[in-house]
Image (cartoon, rainbow, N blue to C red):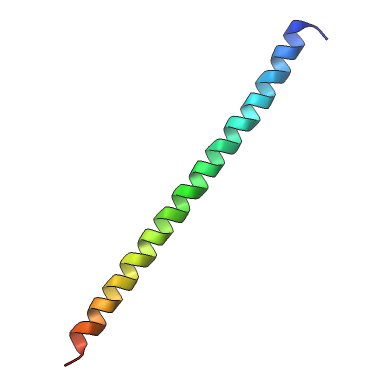
Length: 54
């Protein structure tokens, strides 16, 4: 193998690593978004239930 082949192989490995990090960040963002929506829904429902009780 020569230097150029090693460089191309290293770019492929780096691309896979960066892609994995990108997917992990998107997954974390999706989980945080979903938890925020669920919490807002729960808080809204709790407020509605509290307002109904005499």
